[in-house]
Image (cartoon, rainbow, N blue to C red; front, side, top):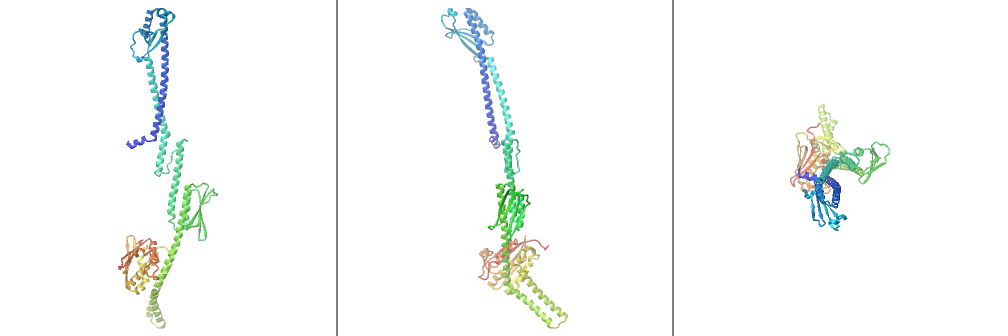
Length: 586
Protein backbone atom coordinates (compact mmCIF):
# COMPACT_ATOMS: atom_id res chain seq x y z
CA UNK A 1 0.00 0.00 0.00
CA UNK A 2 1.56 3.31 -1.08
CA UNK A 3 1.51 6.58 0.82
CA UNK A 4 -1.39 8.01 -1.18
CA UNK A 5 -3.59 5.00 -0.38
CA UNK A 6 -2.67 5.18 3.31
CA UNK A 7 -3.38 8.90 3.34
CA UNK A 8 -6.70 8.27 1.59
CA UNK A 9 -7.70 5.66 4.18
CA UNK A 10 -6.70 7.90 7.10
CA UNK A 11 -8.75 10.76 5.64
CA UNK A 12 -11.76 8.59 4.83
CA UNK A 13 -15.10 9.01 6.62
CA UNK A 14 -15.01 5.30 7.50
CA UNK A 15 -11.75 5.67 9.43
CA UNK A 16 -12.78 8.93 11.13
CA UNK A 17 -16.18 7.59 12.16
CA UNK A 18 -14.61 4.35 13.35
CA UNK A 19 -12.11 6.29 15.50
CA UNK A 20 -14.90 8.42 16.96
CA UNK A 21 -17.06 5.40 17.77
CA UNK A 22 -14.10 3.43 19.09
CA UNK A 23 -13.07 6.34 21.30
CA UNK A 24 -16.62 6.78 22.54
CA UNK A 25 -17.16 3.09 23.23
CA UNK A 26 -13.75 2.76 24.90
CA UNK A 27 -14.36 5.81 27.09
CA UNK A 28 -17.80 4.49 28.02
CA UNK A 29 -16.54 1.01 28.85
CA UNK A 30 -13.60 2.38 30.85
CA UNK A 31 -15.95 4.67 32.77
CA UNK A 32 -18.24 1.75 33.55
CA UNK A 33 -15.22 -0.32 34.54
CA UNK A 34 -13.97 2.45 36.80
CA UNK A 35 -17.39 2.83 38.44
CA UNK A 36 -17.77 -0.91 38.90
CA UNK A 37 -14.28 -1.41 40.32
CA UNK A 38 -14.55 1.63 42.59
CA UNK A 39 -17.93 0.55 43.90
CA UNK A 40 -16.85 -3.05 44.44
CA UNK A 41 -13.63 -1.93 46.12
CA UNK A 42 -15.57 0.32 48.49
CA UNK A 43 -17.95 -2.49 49.36
CA UNK A 44 -15.09 -4.92 49.97
CA UNK A 45 -13.20 -2.42 52.09
CA UNK A 46 -16.39 -1.65 54.02
CA UNK A 47 -16.99 -5.35 54.68
CA UNK A 48 -13.35 -5.80 55.66
CA UNK A 49 -13.53 -2.81 57.98
CA UNK A 50 -16.64 -4.16 59.65
CA UNK A 51 -15.14 -7.62 60.11
CA UNK A 52 -11.91 -6.27 61.47
CA UNK A 53 -13.75 -3.88 63.75
CA UNK A 54 -15.85 -6.74 65.17
CA UNK A 55 -12.76 -8.85 65.78
CA UNK A 56 -10.91 -5.94 67.39
CA UNK A 57 -13.96 -5.14 69.53
CA UNK A 58 -14.13 -8.75 70.71
CA UNK A 59 -10.41 -8.66 71.63
CA UNK A 60 -10.94 -5.38 73.44
CA UNK A 61 -13.80 -6.82 75.45
CA UNK A 62 -11.79 -9.90 76.39
CA UNK A 63 -8.83 -7.72 77.34
CA UNK A 64 -10.97 -5.37 79.37
CA UNK A 65 -12.70 -8.14 81.30
CA UNK A 66 -9.49 -10.06 81.98
CA UNK A 67 -7.64 -6.96 83.17
CA UNK A 68 -10.54 -5.98 85.41
CA UNK A 69 -10.18 -9.35 87.15
CA UNK A 70 -6.45 -8.72 87.72
CA UNK A 71 -5.31 -11.70 85.73
CA UNK A 72 -2.41 -10.03 84.00
CA UNK A 73 -0.51 -13.21 83.15
CA UNK A 74 -3.61 -14.69 81.59
CA UNK A 75 -4.06 -11.55 79.51
CA UNK A 76 -0.60 -11.90 78.01
CA UNK A 77 -1.09 -15.59 77.48
CA UNK A 78 -4.44 -15.13 75.80
CA UNK A 79 -3.16 -12.37 73.56
CA UNK A 80 -0.21 -14.46 72.41
CA UNK A 81 -2.42 -17.45 71.86
CA UNK A 82 -4.83 -15.38 69.83
CA UNK A 83 -2.11 -14.21 67.47
CA UNK A 84 -0.89 -17.79 67.08
CA UNK A 85 -4.22 -19.38 66.20
CA UNK A 86 -6.02 -16.56 64.40
CA UNK A 87 -5.56 -16.49 60.59
CA UNK A 88 -6.32 -12.81 60.60
CA UNK A 89 -4.91 -11.32 63.82
CA UNK A 90 -1.15 -11.26 63.47
CA UNK A 91 -0.07 -8.61 65.96
CA UNK A 92 -1.43 -7.13 69.23
CA UNK A 93 0.17 -4.26 71.09
CA UNK A 94 -0.67 -2.46 74.34
CA UNK A 95 0.37 1.18 74.68
CA UNK A 96 0.12 3.52 77.63
CA UNK A 97 -1.64 6.82 77.40
CA UNK A 98 1.56 8.32 76.04
CA UNK A 99 1.58 5.67 73.32
CA UNK A 100 4.61 3.96 74.64
CA UNK A 101 4.56 0.24 73.84
CA UNK A 102 4.17 -1.73 77.05
CA UNK A 103 3.43 -5.08 75.51
CA UNK A 104 3.39 -6.68 72.11
CA UNK A 105 3.16 -10.13 70.65
CA UNK A 106 5.81 -11.42 68.28
CA UNK A 107 6.37 -8.81 65.56
CA UNK A 108 4.45 -9.78 62.47
CA UNK A 109 6.68 -10.65 59.57
CA UNK A 110 4.52 -8.98 56.97
CA UNK A 111 4.86 -6.20 54.55
CA UNK A 112 3.45 -3.01 55.95
CA UNK A 113 1.19 -2.87 52.86
CA UNK A 114 -0.46 -6.16 53.87
CA UNK A 115 -0.89 -5.29 57.56
CA UNK A 116 -3.73 -3.10 58.72
CA UNK A 117 -3.75 -1.83 62.33
CA UNK A 118 -6.80 -0.75 64.28
CA UNK A 119 -6.33 1.23 67.49
CA UNK A 120 -8.85 1.48 70.35
CA UNK A 121 -8.50 3.68 73.43
CA UNK A 122 -8.65 1.82 76.78
CA UNK A 123 -10.83 3.86 79.10
CA UNK A 124 -10.61 3.40 82.90
CA UNK A 125 -13.45 1.66 84.67
CA UNK A 126 -14.06 2.07 88.41
CA UNK A 127 -12.36 -1.22 89.06
CA UNK A 128 -9.24 0.05 87.31
CA UNK A 129 -8.67 2.94 89.72
CA UNK A 130 -6.94 0.62 92.18
CA UNK A 131 -4.05 -0.01 89.78
CA UNK A 132 -4.11 3.02 87.50
CA UNK A 133 -5.31 5.77 89.78
CA UNK A 134 -7.86 8.30 88.61
CA UNK A 135 -6.76 8.26 84.99
CA UNK A 136 -9.60 8.29 82.47
CA UNK A 137 -7.45 7.06 79.60
CA UNK A 138 -5.33 4.09 80.57
CA UNK A 139 -3.79 3.41 77.16
CA UNK A 140 -4.48 1.96 73.71
CA UNK A 141 -5.14 -1.45 72.23
CA UNK A 142 -3.64 -1.83 68.80
CA UNK A 143 -4.51 -4.91 66.72
CA UNK A 144 -2.70 -5.71 63.46
CA UNK A 145 -4.65 -7.70 60.87
CA UNK A 146 -3.35 -9.59 57.81
CA UNK A 147 -5.25 -8.26 54.77
CA UNK A 148 -3.26 -10.18 52.12
CA UNK A 149 -6.22 -12.39 51.24
CA UNK A 150 -8.54 -9.40 50.94
CA UNK A 151 -6.02 -7.63 48.72
CA UNK A 152 -5.74 -10.74 46.55
CA UNK A 153 -9.50 -10.90 46.31
CA UNK A 154 -9.59 -7.26 45.31
CA UNK A 155 -6.87 -7.74 42.69
CA UNK A 156 -8.61 -10.85 41.36
CA UNK A 157 -11.86 -8.98 41.15
CA UNK A 158 -10.18 -6.09 39.33
CA UNK A 159 -8.56 -8.47 36.82
CA UNK A 160 -11.86 -10.23 36.27
CA UNK A 161 -13.68 -6.97 35.74
CA UNK A 162 -10.92 -5.62 33.51
CA UNK A 163 -10.91 -8.76 31.33
CA UNK A 164 -14.70 -8.88 31.13
CA UNK A 165 -14.98 -5.24 30.17
CA UNK A 166 -12.27 -5.46 27.56
CA UNK A 167 -13.99 -8.46 26.04
CA UNK A 168 -17.21 -6.46 26.15
CA UNK A 169 -15.39 -3.54 24.52
CA UNK A 170 -14.09 -5.76 21.71
CA UNK A 171 -17.50 -7.36 21.18
CA UNK A 172 -19.34 -4.03 21.14
CA UNK A 173 -16.74 -2.43 18.86
CA UNK A 174 -16.82 -5.40 16.49
CA UNK A 175 -20.60 -5.41 16.44
CA UNK A 176 -20.78 -1.67 15.86
CA UNK A 177 -18.09 -1.81 13.14
CA UNK A 178 -19.77 -4.72 11.33
CA UNK A 179 -23.13 -3.01 11.62
CA UNK A 180 -21.70 0.25 10.30
CA UNK A 181 -19.79 -1.53 7.56
CA UNK A 182 -22.83 -3.44 6.31
CA UNK A 183 -25.49 -0.89 7.11
CA UNK A 184 -23.70 2.34 6.25
CA UNK A 185 -20.19 2.14 4.80
CA UNK A 186 -20.88 -0.43 2.08
CA UNK A 187 -24.00 1.41 1.09
CA UNK A 188 -22.07 4.68 1.07
CA UNK A 189 -19.44 2.96 -1.09
CA UNK A 190 -22.22 1.93 -3.46
CA UNK A 191 -23.43 5.53 -3.54
CA UNK A 192 -19.83 6.71 -4.21
CA UNK A 193 -19.33 4.14 -6.99
CA UNK A 194 -22.62 5.17 -8.57
CA UNK A 195 -21.60 8.85 -8.47
CA UNK A 196 -18.27 8.00 -10.11
CA UNK A 197 -20.13 6.07 -12.81
CA UNK A 198 -22.39 9.05 -13.46
CA UNK A 199 -19.32 11.33 -13.56
CA UNK A 200 -17.89 9.03 -16.25
CA UNK A 201 -21.10 9.41 -18.25
CA UNK A 202 -22.90 6.19 -17.25
CA UNK A 203 -26.29 7.74 -16.54
CA UNK A 204 -27.99 4.33 -16.35
CA UNK A 205 -26.23 3.48 -13.07
CA UNK A 206 -28.66 2.80 -10.23
CA UNK A 207 -28.30 2.20 -6.46
CA UNK A 208 -30.15 -0.65 -4.75
CA UNK A 209 -32.67 0.70 -2.24
CA UNK A 210 -32.74 -1.16 1.09
CA UNK A 211 -35.09 -0.13 3.88
CA UNK A 212 -36.37 3.36 4.44
CA UNK A 213 -33.53 5.06 6.30
CA UNK A 214 -31.59 8.17 5.29
CA UNK A 215 -29.24 6.30 2.94
CA UNK A 216 -32.22 4.64 1.26
CA UNK A 217 -33.73 8.08 0.77
CA UNK A 218 -30.42 9.31 -0.69
CA UNK A 219 -30.41 6.27 -3.00
CA UNK A 220 -33.96 7.02 -4.17
CA UNK A 221 -33.09 10.67 -4.80
CA UNK A 222 -29.89 9.66 -6.63
CA UNK A 223 -31.76 7.15 -8.80
CA UNK A 224 -34.32 9.76 -9.72
CA UNK A 225 -31.56 12.26 -10.43
CA UNK A 226 -29.64 9.74 -12.55
CA UNK A 227 -32.80 8.83 -14.44
CA UNK A 228 -33.54 12.50 -15.07
CA UNK A 229 -29.97 13.14 -16.23
CA UNK A 230 -30.18 10.09 -18.52
CA UNK A 231 -33.44 11.34 -20.00
CA UNK A 232 -32.07 14.87 -20.36
CA UNK A 233 -28.88 13.55 -21.94
CA UNK A 234 -30.87 11.34 -24.32
CA UNK A 235 -33.07 14.28 -25.25
CA UNK A 236 -30.01 16.48 -25.78
CA UNK A 237 -28.42 13.83 -27.99
CA UNK A 238 -31.61 13.53 -30.00
CA UNK A 239 -31.94 17.31 -30.12
CA UNK A 240 -28.34 17.62 -31.33
CA UNK A 241 -29.04 15.02 -34.01
CA UNK A 242 -32.26 16.81 -34.91
CA UNK A 243 -30.59 20.22 -35.31
CA UNK A 244 -27.94 18.66 -37.55
CA UNK A 245 -30.44 16.79 -39.73
CA UNK A 246 -33.08 19.51 -39.94
CA UNK A 247 -30.61 21.92 -41.54
CA UNK A 248 -29.76 19.29 -44.17
CA UNK A 249 -33.33 19.01 -45.42
CA UNK A 250 -34.05 20.43 -48.87
CA UNK A 251 -37.82 20.93 -48.61
CA UNK A 252 -40.25 22.14 -45.98
CA UNK A 253 -42.18 18.86 -46.07
CA UNK A 254 -39.01 16.96 -45.15
CA UNK A 255 -38.44 19.41 -42.29
CA UNK A 256 -41.98 18.97 -40.93
CA UNK A 257 -41.90 15.16 -41.19
CA UNK A 258 -38.51 15.01 -39.48
CA UNK A 259 -39.76 17.36 -36.74
CA UNK A 260 -42.80 15.16 -36.02
CA UNK A 261 -40.62 12.06 -35.79
CA UNK A 262 -38.24 13.70 -33.32
CA UNK A 263 -41.02 15.26 -31.25
CA UNK A 264 -42.52 11.78 -30.91
CA UNK A 265 -39.16 10.36 -29.78
CA UNK A 266 -38.07 13.20 -27.49
CA UNK A 267 -41.50 13.61 -25.89
CA UNK A 268 -43.06 10.12 -25.86
CA UNK A 269 -46.70 10.14 -24.89
CA UNK A 270 -47.23 13.67 -26.17
CA UNK A 271 -49.44 14.60 -29.09
CA UNK A 272 -47.65 16.86 -31.60
CA UNK A 273 -49.22 19.10 -34.21
CA UNK A 274 -47.58 21.45 -36.74
CA UNK A 275 -49.50 24.12 -38.63
CA UNK A 276 -47.72 26.15 -41.29
CA UNK A 277 -48.81 28.69 -43.89
CA UNK A 278 -47.39 28.22 -47.35
CA UNK A 279 -48.42 29.92 -50.59
CA UNK A 280 -51.77 31.05 -49.20
CA UNK A 281 -52.82 27.72 -47.70
CA UNK A 282 -52.49 26.12 -44.26
CA UNK A 283 -50.71 22.79 -43.99
CA UNK A 284 -51.27 20.65 -40.90
CA UNK A 285 -49.18 17.68 -39.86
CA UNK A 286 -49.73 15.83 -36.59
CA UNK A 287 -49.25 12.60 -34.68
CA UNK A 288 -52.25 10.38 -33.77
CA UNK A 289 -54.65 12.11 -31.36
CA UNK A 290 -55.69 10.22 -28.20
CA UNK A 291 -58.33 12.62 -26.88
CA UNK A 292 -58.41 15.69 -24.67
CA UNK A 293 -55.28 16.85 -22.91
CA UNK A 294 -54.81 18.93 -19.78
CA UNK A 295 -51.52 20.55 -20.77
CA UNK A 296 -50.85 22.32 -24.09
CA UNK A 297 -47.60 23.99 -25.12
CA UNK A 298 -47.43 26.06 -28.29
CA UNK A 299 -44.62 27.99 -29.93
CA UNK A 300 -44.65 30.11 -33.08
CA UNK A 301 -42.60 29.31 -36.20
CA UNK A 302 -41.01 32.62 -37.18
CA UNK A 303 -39.05 33.28 -40.37
CA UNK A 304 -37.66 36.71 -41.23
CA UNK A 305 -39.63 38.22 -38.31
CA UNK A 306 -42.88 36.85 -39.71
CA UNK A 307 -45.14 34.30 -37.98
CA UNK A 308 -45.79 31.53 -40.50
CA UNK A 309 -47.17 28.79 -38.24
CA UNK A 310 -47.10 27.02 -34.88
CA UNK A 311 -45.89 23.81 -33.26
CA UNK A 312 -47.97 22.46 -30.38
CA UNK A 313 -47.48 19.48 -28.10
CA UNK A 314 -50.19 18.26 -25.73
CA UNK A 315 -50.30 15.81 -22.84
CA UNK A 316 -51.72 15.17 -19.40
CA UNK A 317 -48.26 15.74 -17.92
CA UNK A 318 -46.48 19.03 -17.37
CA UNK A 319 -43.21 19.68 -19.14
CA UNK A 320 -40.17 20.23 -16.96
CA UNK A 321 -38.11 23.38 -17.49
CA UNK A 322 -35.51 21.33 -19.35
CA UNK A 323 -38.12 19.72 -21.60
CA UNK A 324 -39.74 23.09 -22.29
CA UNK A 325 -36.33 24.56 -23.19
CA UNK A 326 -35.64 21.71 -25.62
CA UNK A 327 -39.09 22.16 -27.17
CA UNK A 328 -38.51 25.89 -27.66
CA UNK A 329 -35.06 25.27 -29.14
CA UNK A 330 -36.53 22.69 -31.54
CA UNK A 331 -39.07 25.26 -32.73
CA UNK A 332 -36.24 27.77 -33.24
CA UNK A 333 -34.31 25.15 -35.25
CA UNK A 334 -37.39 24.43 -37.38
CA UNK A 335 -37.88 28.17 -37.95
CA UNK A 336 -34.27 28.58 -39.04
CA UNK A 337 -34.40 25.52 -41.31
CA UNK A 338 -37.59 26.71 -43.05
CA UNK A 339 -36.19 30.22 -43.29
CA UNK A 340 -33.04 28.82 -44.87
CA UNK A 341 -35.06 26.78 -47.38
CA UNK A 342 -37.29 29.70 -48.33
CA UNK A 343 -34.35 32.10 -48.55
CA UNK A 344 -32.46 29.56 -50.64
CA UNK A 345 -35.44 29.16 -52.95
CA UNK A 346 -35.66 32.93 -53.33
CA UNK A 347 -31.93 33.31 -53.86
CA UNK A 348 -31.93 30.40 -56.31
CA UNK A 349 -34.76 31.99 -58.25
CA UNK A 350 -32.95 35.34 -58.27
CA UNK A 351 -29.71 33.69 -59.33
CA UNK A 352 -31.52 31.79 -62.04
CA UNK A 353 -33.12 34.98 -63.30
CA UNK A 354 -29.78 36.75 -63.17
CA UNK A 355 -28.12 33.87 -65.01
CA UNK A 356 -30.86 33.93 -67.63
CA UNK A 357 -30.47 37.67 -68.07
CA UNK A 358 -26.73 37.16 -68.45
CA UNK A 359 -27.44 34.57 -71.15
CA UNK A 360 -29.75 37.00 -72.93
CA UNK A 361 -27.06 39.65 -72.66
CA UNK A 362 -24.48 37.26 -74.08
CA UNK A 363 -26.88 36.22 -76.78
CA UNK A 364 -27.42 39.87 -77.69
CA UNK A 365 -23.66 40.36 -78.00
CA UNK A 366 -23.41 37.24 -80.21
CA UNK A 367 -26.55 37.96 -82.23
CA UNK A 368 -24.70 39.49 -85.18
CA UNK A 369 -22.33 36.55 -85.35
CA UNK A 370 -25.20 34.09 -85.08
CA UNK A 371 -27.12 35.82 -87.86
CA UNK A 372 -23.96 35.80 -90.00
CA UNK A 373 -23.52 32.09 -89.20
CA UNK A 374 -27.10 31.45 -90.31
CA UNK A 375 -26.99 33.76 -93.31
CA UNK A 376 -24.20 31.93 -95.17
CA UNK A 377 -25.85 28.49 -95.26
CA UNK A 378 -29.25 30.15 -95.76
CA UNK A 379 -27.93 31.85 -98.94
CA UNK A 380 -26.82 28.45 -100.14
CA UNK A 381 -30.24 27.00 -99.48
CA UNK A 382 -31.90 29.83 -101.45
CA UNK A 383 -29.45 29.54 -104.34
CA UNK A 384 -29.70 25.78 -104.77
CA UNK A 385 -33.48 25.97 -104.37
CA UNK A 386 -33.70 28.52 -107.21
CA UNK A 387 -31.54 26.30 -109.42
CA UNK A 388 -33.84 23.39 -108.79
CA UNK A 389 -36.94 25.51 -109.32
CA UNK A 390 -36.05 27.38 -112.51
CA UNK A 391 -33.72 24.96 -114.32
CA UNK A 392 -33.98 21.39 -115.48
CA UNK A 393 -31.39 18.96 -114.17
CA UNK A 394 -30.69 15.31 -114.37
CA UNK A 395 -31.36 13.09 -111.42
CA UNK A 396 -27.73 13.09 -110.25
CA UNK A 397 -27.53 16.89 -110.22
CA UNK A 398 -30.85 17.16 -108.41
CA UNK A 399 -29.62 14.80 -105.69
CA UNK A 400 -26.39 16.77 -105.37
CA UNK A 401 -28.29 20.09 -104.99
CA UNK A 402 -30.68 18.46 -102.49
CA UNK A 403 -27.68 17.21 -100.49
CA UNK A 404 -26.22 20.75 -100.42
CA UNK A 405 -29.57 22.14 -99.26
CA UNK A 406 -29.79 19.45 -96.52
CA UNK A 407 -26.26 20.20 -95.30
CA UNK A 408 -26.94 23.94 -95.13
CA UNK A 409 -30.31 23.40 -93.41
CA UNK A 410 -28.72 21.06 -90.89
CA UNK A 411 -26.04 23.65 -90.15
CA UNK A 412 -28.74 26.28 -89.61
CA UNK A 413 -30.74 23.91 -87.39
CA UNK A 414 -27.71 23.02 -85.27
CA UNK A 415 -26.79 26.69 -84.83
CA UNK A 416 -30.32 27.68 -83.84
CA UNK A 417 -30.63 24.60 -81.57
CA UNK A 418 -27.42 25.45 -79.75
CA UNK A 419 -28.59 29.02 -79.30
CA UNK A 420 -32.00 27.91 -77.96
CA UNK A 421 -30.39 25.44 -75.57
CA UNK A 422 -28.11 28.18 -74.32
CA UNK A 423 -30.99 30.61 -73.80
CA UNK A 424 -33.29 28.10 -72.12
CA UNK A 425 -33.92 28.89 -68.44
CA UNK A 426 -32.48 26.00 -66.46
CA UNK A 427 -34.89 26.08 -63.47
CA UNK A 428 -34.27 23.10 -61.20
CA UNK A 429 -32.53 20.90 -63.76
CA UNK A 430 -30.77 17.83 -62.45
CA UNK A 431 -27.07 17.38 -62.99
CA UNK A 432 -26.08 14.82 -65.60
CA UNK A 433 -22.84 13.05 -66.36
CA UNK A 434 -21.35 14.74 -69.41
CA UNK A 435 -18.03 14.92 -71.23
CA UNK A 436 -16.52 18.37 -70.71
CA UNK A 437 -14.88 18.12 -74.13
CA UNK A 438 -18.32 18.19 -75.70
CA UNK A 439 -19.37 21.25 -73.71
CA UNK A 440 -16.22 23.11 -74.77
CA UNK A 441 -16.89 22.26 -78.44
CA UNK A 442 -20.46 23.64 -78.20
CA UNK A 443 -19.21 26.90 -76.66
CA UNK A 444 -16.47 27.31 -79.25
CA UNK A 445 -19.03 26.74 -81.98
CA UNK A 446 -21.15 29.57 -80.56
CA UNK A 447 -18.09 31.87 -80.40
CA UNK A 448 -16.51 30.76 -83.67
CA UNK A 449 -17.58 33.76 -85.81
CA UNK A 450 -16.86 36.39 -83.11
CA UNK A 451 -13.40 35.06 -82.45
CA UNK A 452 -12.59 34.81 -86.16
CA UNK A 453 -13.77 38.36 -86.81
CA UNK A 454 -11.47 39.67 -84.06
CA UNK A 455 -8.51 37.70 -85.33
CA UNK A 456 -8.30 35.51 -82.25
CA UNK A 457 -6.80 32.12 -82.86
CA UNK A 458 -8.24 29.19 -80.91
CA UNK A 459 -5.93 26.36 -79.81
CA UNK A 460 -7.46 23.30 -78.15
CA UNK A 461 -5.79 20.50 -76.21
CA UNK A 462 -8.51 18.03 -75.39
CA UNK A 463 -7.84 15.03 -73.19
CA UNK A 464 -7.48 11.79 -75.16
CA UNK A 465 -10.05 10.21 -72.87
CA UNK A 466 -13.51 11.70 -72.14
CA UNK A 467 -13.50 13.99 -69.11
CA UNK A 468 -16.78 13.28 -67.34
CA UNK A 469 -18.34 15.36 -64.55
CA UNK A 470 -21.84 15.79 -63.13
CA UNK A 471 -22.96 19.15 -64.49
CA UNK A 472 -25.91 21.23 -65.60
CA UNK A 473 -24.66 21.72 -69.19
CA UNK A 474 -26.03 25.17 -70.03
CA UNK A 475 -24.69 26.56 -66.71
CA UNK A 476 -21.16 25.34 -67.48
CA UNK A 477 -21.59 26.72 -71.02
CA UNK A 478 -22.53 30.08 -69.51
CA UNK A 479 -19.47 30.05 -67.25
CA UNK A 480 -17.14 29.24 -70.16
CA UNK A 481 -18.74 31.89 -72.36
CA UNK A 482 -18.29 34.56 -69.67
CA UNK A 483 -14.60 33.72 -69.29
CA UNK A 484 -14.03 33.56 -73.08
CA UNK A 485 -15.88 36.85 -73.60
CA UNK A 486 -13.62 38.57 -71.05
CA UNK A 487 -10.51 37.06 -72.66
CA UNK A 488 -11.72 38.12 -76.12
CA UNK A 489 -12.38 41.68 -74.91
CA UNK A 490 -8.98 41.99 -73.20
CA UNK A 491 -6.93 40.61 -76.13
CA UNK A 492 -8.70 42.62 -78.79
CA UNK A 493 -8.50 45.86 -76.81
CA UNK A 494 -4.73 45.54 -76.26
CA UNK A 495 -3.47 44.36 -79.65
CA UNK A 496 -6.57 43.62 -81.80
CA UNK A 497 -5.70 39.97 -82.01
CA UNK A 498 -4.71 37.11 -79.75
CA UNK A 499 -4.50 33.44 -78.99
CA UNK A 500 -7.06 31.59 -76.90
CA UNK A 501 -5.98 28.20 -75.61
CA UNK A 502 -8.45 25.73 -74.06
CA UNK A 503 -7.31 22.47 -72.45
CA UNK A 504 -9.18 19.65 -70.71
CA UNK A 505 -7.52 17.10 -68.47
CA UNK A 506 -7.84 14.82 -65.45
CA UNK A 507 -6.26 16.03 -62.19
CA UNK A 508 -6.63 13.33 -59.52
CA UNK A 509 -10.25 13.51 -58.35
CA UNK A 510 -11.07 16.50 -60.56
CA UNK A 511 -11.89 17.11 -64.21
CA UNK A 512 -10.30 20.38 -65.27
CA UNK A 513 -10.84 22.99 -67.97
CA UNK A 514 -7.98 25.47 -68.49
CA UNK A 515 -8.71 28.69 -70.46
CA UNK A 516 -5.61 30.79 -71.28
CA UNK A 517 -5.18 34.04 -73.19
CA UNK A 518 -2.24 36.24 -74.14
CA UNK A 519 -3.96 39.44 -73.05
CA UNK A 520 -2.66 42.13 -70.66
CA UNK A 521 -2.94 39.95 -67.54
CA UNK A 522 -4.28 41.02 -64.15
CA UNK A 523 -2.87 42.64 -61.03
CA UNK A 524 -3.25 41.08 -57.60
CA UNK A 525 -5.90 43.65 -56.72
CA UNK A 526 -8.01 42.66 -59.73
CA UNK A 527 -7.59 38.95 -58.96
CA UNK A 528 -8.70 39.49 -55.35
CA UNK A 529 -11.84 41.36 -56.40
CA UNK A 530 -12.79 39.77 -59.71
CA UNK A 531 -15.47 37.51 -58.21
CA UNK A 532 -17.16 40.33 -56.27
CA UNK A 533 -20.50 41.50 -57.59
CA UNK A 534 -20.39 44.72 -59.66
CA UNK A 535 -16.57 44.79 -59.80
CA UNK A 536 -15.39 45.53 -63.32
CA UNK A 537 -12.34 46.98 -65.11
CA UNK A 538 -14.35 47.89 -68.19
CA UNK A 539 -15.41 51.47 -68.91
CA UNK A 540 -18.94 52.51 -67.89
CA UNK A 541 -21.56 51.07 -70.22
CA UNK A 542 -19.35 48.18 -71.33
CA UNK A 543 -19.41 45.96 -68.21
CA UNK A 544 -21.91 45.14 -65.47
CA UNK A 545 -19.60 43.40 -63.00
CA UNK A 546 -21.88 40.32 -62.96
CA UNK A 547 -20.15 37.95 -65.35
CA UNK A 548 -17.36 36.60 -63.16
CA UNK A 549 -19.43 36.43 -59.90
CA UNK A 550 -21.95 34.32 -61.85
CA UNK A 551 -19.08 32.07 -62.98
CA UNK A 552 -17.99 31.63 -59.34
CA UNK A 553 -21.56 30.80 -58.21
CA UNK A 554 -21.98 28.26 -61.00
CA UNK A 555 -18.72 26.47 -60.17
CA UNK A 556 -19.50 26.54 -56.41
CA UNK A 557 -22.95 25.03 -57.08
CA UNK A 558 -21.18 22.18 -58.86
CA UNK A 559 -18.96 21.59 -55.76
CA UNK A 560 -15.97 22.66 -57.78
CA UNK A 561 -13.46 25.49 -57.57
CA UNK A 562 -11.94 28.08 -59.86
CA UNK A 563 -8.57 29.76 -59.55
CA UNK A 564 -6.63 32.28 -61.60
CA UNK A 565 -2.97 32.36 -62.62
CA UNK A 566 -2.02 35.74 -64.05
CA UNK A 567 0.71 38.34 -64.26
CA UNK A 568 0.51 41.81 -65.71
CA UNK A 569 1.48 41.78 -69.46
CA UNK A 570 1.77 37.97 -69.41
CA UNK A 571 -1.79 36.87 -69.97
CA UNK A 572 -4.16 34.96 -67.72
CA UNK A 573 -5.24 31.36 -67.12
CA UNK A 574 -8.53 30.32 -65.53
CA UNK A 575 -8.48 26.79 -64.07
CA UNK A 576 -11.92 25.25 -63.47
CA UNK A 577 -11.96 22.03 -61.41
CA UNK A 578 -15.11 19.90 -61.19
CA UNK A 579 -15.45 16.61 -59.25
CA UNK A 580 -14.80 13.71 -61.58
CA UNK A 581 -17.34 10.86 -61.78
CA UNK A 582 -16.14 8.26 -64.26
CA UNK A 583 -13.97 7.55 -67.28
CA UNK A 584 -16.98 6.60 -69.36
CA UNK A 585 -20.62 7.34 -69.58
CA UNK A 586 -22.51 4.54 -67.94
